[in-house]
Length: 466
Image (cartoon, rainbow, N blue to C red; front, side, top):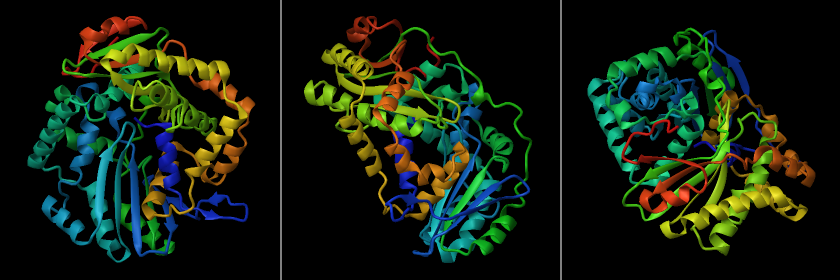
């Protein structure tokens, strides 16, 4: 899951900030332009070290998978490096390794990405490889089958670790058949049926420059890099704009408490999530919500961890998250506990949530939370990779440098009155949704205390439970 706490860590780590006389941090200067094919390009010069980092973001995520082909976006992104028009897989790997570079590819819920870092002197060779990886992958059938088999093994292994799969169960419980409920790495049933032709077709239909972006940060003159990128990527053919945005479609918010009980016969612990619908990434109260969530469940000294770990000894750790996407999101509390203390741990988590609503946040705690969040904004994060990723995230989630430049000011502007309004508005406490992974015959009666129970087996593929 993508979470508010995770996003803040990522966004802030992406920043190379320079202090002004007031101690504020500002994003370094950058430029942007758009090619005729629709590709958005960001350039930021950083000359301290002779390296260049590249980040590419493409609208080709799990939300674009057909239900019967879940995992296709993920496999396609991985298969980009299986060879190109002019590079076999072995030649590509050897060249990148010899130059001391790297090229990473992957897919998330909403998009696919390509990332690279290399010495400035090698920019022509690596940029050409990146272009071929994006535009001219060959999708070798033999390599595809190897990758698919590795994914199938991984899917089996994940079932042995409740914490590896509980998020997917929770997403299905909240989003059901909405595309945000799509499982990024698929299921054994869907992945088994995928073919190399499926990958080729997915790439053809989704790896398009329209609504994609590339950011280049490092040791180069922007004027020369603009010419280079324009020439390299002009052959990336523009495709048809998608007529519907399935991710923006509304979905029914659960109006009663439901419990998905996932049976794992050999479980000695109960792993659980409690939550509801959350917020989208562009919520205007995003920063304020993060400050409050930091106090509630976003740090070691949070309310949740204090009560469930420190004061009661029910778990080794408990926390809360806002997982945000472009058009929606979830809020959830998560932890694990011994089978014997399942009920006590769930009750305590709900009690702490109710306390947050009933007592709110006072000035002392708010100041502590604000200082903690600002403390995650250090001045020495200045890598080109962090900045390149930040620029593509700014593109995808449609926020600008004011988010960075005004970050501390916006944290400081949060007062107690606003904080408690945030709690009432954004921290759900009614019609909570539960996922419990554990030994069902020992915890089912406990689960029934909280609402309607649907039991499934962890060895089965994840599906919409209700």
